[in-house]
Length: 498
Picture (cartoon, helix red, strand yellow):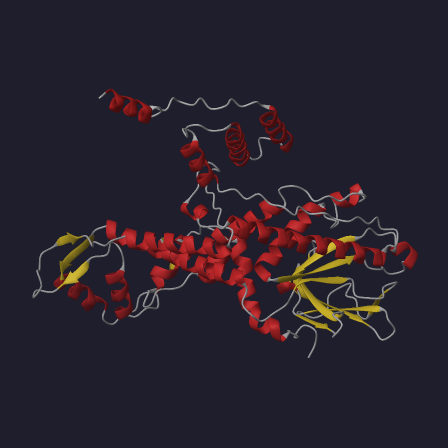
């Protein structure tokens, strides 16, 4: 078995679902093609359409509301709302850590997304390989670059009892079209990194389409005493919470697709004709085939096709007419809405905004703020450790690599804008509010404004507003006279007069 055929037992069980999760985050046509389900007894014309006649099938007509992608992006938005502190780091490297113009900030967002849908991912520090005729001294001047391998990119690996990576295999798509006079070549490149008995790292490359130029075979990576990889998360064959998110999204996708089809079937009328017309057509086509299809197949497609007449026998009504099916379309939309609510409830990060931050949907009322903040803080700690691991890996190649201690935010203030706004409205006319209550109310209002105007106000402006509130002397409440005060004394006085 070669390195192009190896697959870890965990990947054998998890690969299909992780691929679905990755497609769900990206959305678009690839996810629709993967997860749209064909209805039982659905005809080829209904499913695939008929390009020769300009008919678009249901598969092509279906669109996707990408809730799973919104979930992954929302986690990124909260964690990376403020950049992590990276004191002492080289500014040039922070601006480009991949050799492709990607900053450390953006790179770690990709790491976070890969962790969200895959449960684990692999990080690598690397530099350009030793070119032919190049000395190790010359190669050591090549810049360090960071590489992300998601769970799908590493089909097999070996970790010893001490937690050290003995070897692993990466795979990546390669496309070679440098020579315009030759056909382009594309293949899947498999690279084996292994720690040899002599304590050095060796690299072997193969493709799934034979030999290609510049492949490395047992090439020595000088100066390394361990594999320049770090594992983030824990590989496991057990289900991951994002599997449930993807599964619910697949159901919503299919409900929305069928709702659209049912809507068309319900709105557009269907012509009914006497069966004698159909019998005449069958007689003419009895011994022929059209476009490679049998007469029976053609007739079945005609009877199911929209805008194609239905043939009715004489024992039936026998009257040419239009019929319009009826149905309760609300059931499909309500079920899709229920499942979308369940999707965000499962995530534990159900602060769901559609077009504007001022409008909060029902999902935003279902999340538990404490759980959300704790989840985000835990994820930030994972990313902080991942970045620290990459810094150490970089120093394997370059002892002079400028290190830093990344510090990610540890506190997250996730606000349910709808609920907090409603509470402020209810307390606006509360009588006899003390200065302390008024100060708290004003700070809560600033908290709402901070979320509503995110992106248009700075943290400095928010801090200034809070400082103004602290410096403001709120008036004591005006106490209205008690109409019952002294009533008892007046009653006693009346009794004595008698």
